[in-house]
Length: 503
Image 1 (cartoon, rainbow, N blue to C red):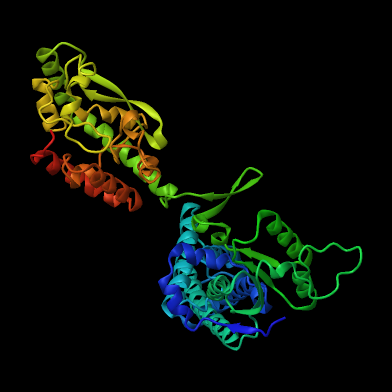
Image 2 (cartoon, helix red, strand yellow):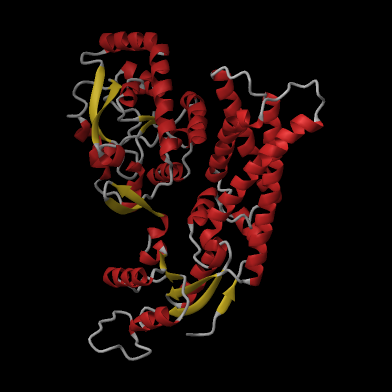
């Protein structure tokens, strides 16, 4: 093996500050197998449990010996064991959920204090609520408060001690995880740096193999023994290796399976950088569907909760807008009937989420023979790209021109929103014939439900170049948030009232 190279993060605190919550969560899950790191969580959890046990007699002594005698007297200590145990279990649960039992070397002092006091405060509130709900009057609330304060102080001291322990162990490298890297020099260096930042006690790079080096034998292979990766097998047999990390795209699926099997035989943890699987895998997540594990790549980073909130906003606002606009619907329907023969509503096939077809609803603004007469005015098209737009379209009725001017013809699409075919804010739905010449990157606009209003409608005139509006829609999809939807909704009315070309 090559000479070992020590790799430590110079300032893990600054690194943690620069990473997002998602990356921090992933780093906490990373198992470092070397030395104390393998058992850190159990040690931290046990330490917290002992502290909560010690806090009980201290709080009892403080209540009975230090406070004035005229305070509510206490029963025997065993009376309070059950409530204290309930608070202790709740505290441990909250601490675990907030990651307090993962290595805290990179946490700031204020973060430790906030985590501990939040956990203890939540547990005390939970315990007090149960006592009130079940009318347990004999348990002193003052004792619970003293138990919480004592626990919080002791837990804070212990966690500062754990932080010092992790920091000291990382500095001397005594408990670092020993890793073997597979990849080119540049790929291995990037992965080693990431592992060093995520591993609580740092990492020591024992050796590095390229994909070609894996199959080169460094010692004779016993007769009759089949070894897929003789170099790796020899190193795993002779050296103390905690983890093997793959950072290259040069290993195929079959070789990767053999590598996983070799690590499994040795009981060694295997990391595979998803970026090493190929372009686009940087955003892959591992999902479990029944008994099948899937590596999923979603080009959108919108969370399920955010999407649910967007749908909830639709289901709240759409009925309100329907009720508020009901008198207007009656007036528009009457005006359409008086102005020209034909149905009140116009139905047309449009493309929705992932190009699913649906029937969009609009108030009719054209004559009945509008579709047949389109060929007559094809030469008058003033829009570029796949869209068809004509100022002063001769097929539009008198009432229809007014409805289009103020976008009132779009009101029935509130029913499409309630049906789940559309949303209040999103890219406008397009005709099937308008997307036949779309480039692949342009079709991403169909990755969200179409909307009644959208970024294109409030930011640009409808007479602007097609690509200008398309980029506005793609930018909306890329940076979507619930707050962005609310801002677009607020800007929709001013956009409708200003005199836009092409209406």
